Length: 336
Ligand SMILES: Nc1ncnc2c1ncn2[C@@H]1O[C@H](COP(=O)(O)OP(=O)(O)OP(=O)(O)O)[C@@H](O)[C@H]1O
Ligand SMILES: [Mg+2]
Image (cartoon, rainbow, N blue to C red; front, side, top):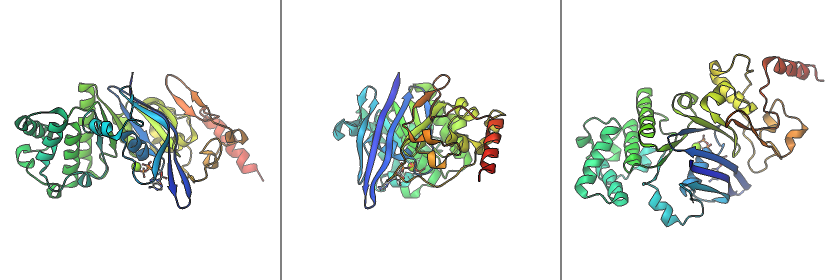
C-alpha cells in the first residue's frame, strides 16, 4: 500500500506575465520501504511537488486541484495546524540549504532535542541523549562536543548531516529530500545516502528523493519518476527506466549515462529550450522538442502501461530501436 499517494496535483503561480502552470496533474506513489527518485530538468516542478505535499508553498503559488494522501489522509485539504504537527514527526523534510534551515541562535544539540520533545513528548534528559545518538548516527565524530556547536560553526557537509539528524530524530514514516547531498564531497554524499538507505530498510520508512544526479538514483532508489513541465512523463523501477526508457525525454536524459541502456536503444540528443509554462502546448508538453512529434501529439496524452508498473505519458512510447531511428533521420535529412 502507498504511504504517499499524489493524485492529479495542479499548482498555479500568478505572475506579472500570466499564470504559470507549474504542476499540471502530478501522479506519484511512494510505498513503505521505498526510495523513489524524482528527476527532471531544472524548472520541471520537482521542488514545487515537494512543497505542495508539505504545505510549504510560498508566495503566489497555489494548489488549484489534486490530493496528496499520506497514510490515508489528504495533506492538501488538511488544516495547516494539523500538517504542522505531522511535519517533523511522521513527515520530515531535508532541504538544499542546510544552514538556512537551522536556527542560528540555538546549539544544534538543543535544536534536535527540542524537536524530539515537542513531537514525541520525551523528557529533557532523554531528548538530549537522543539528539546525541542521532548526531552519531549521521557519522558526526564527537557528537557530545558537536552538539554544543551553532549552525555558523559548521561546514556545509556537517550542516547537511545535522539537518538529516534533525529529520530523523522522530522516526518519520516519510522523508522528502530535495537535493540532500548536492554540493557535498562524494564521501560524505555516499555516507548520507547509505544512511538513508539503511534507515528505510531497517524501519520501513520511505524517502522521496529529488535529485539531478542519475548515479545517485541508480545506486540508491527503487523506483524513479521522471518529470517534465509539471507532469510525471515516465515512471518505473530503476532497471526499467535506466535500461529501457520509453519516453523520448527520458531517453535523452538517460542517454548521458548510456552504458546502462540496452545495446539497441538509440541515444537521443538533449535539447534544452525550457517549456513556456504560461502557454503550454495542447497535448504532449514535450512536443516542441520531440524529434518524433506528429499531429497526434497535440491530442490529450494517455499514460501507457508497459511491463509491471512501467508507465509512459506518450502517444508513441515504444522504444524506437536503432534502425527505426536511423530511418527517421534519413527521412529528416531528405526532407526539403
Ligand atoms: N515564485 C515563483 N514565481 C514564478 N514562477 C515560479 C515560482 N516558483 C517556481 N516557479 C516556476 O515553477 C517551475 C517549477 O519550479 P521548481 O522549483 O519546482 O523546479 P525544480 O524542478 O525543482 O527545478 P530545480 O531542478 O532547478 O530545482 C519553474 O519553472 C519555476 O520557474
Ligand atoms: Mg528544485
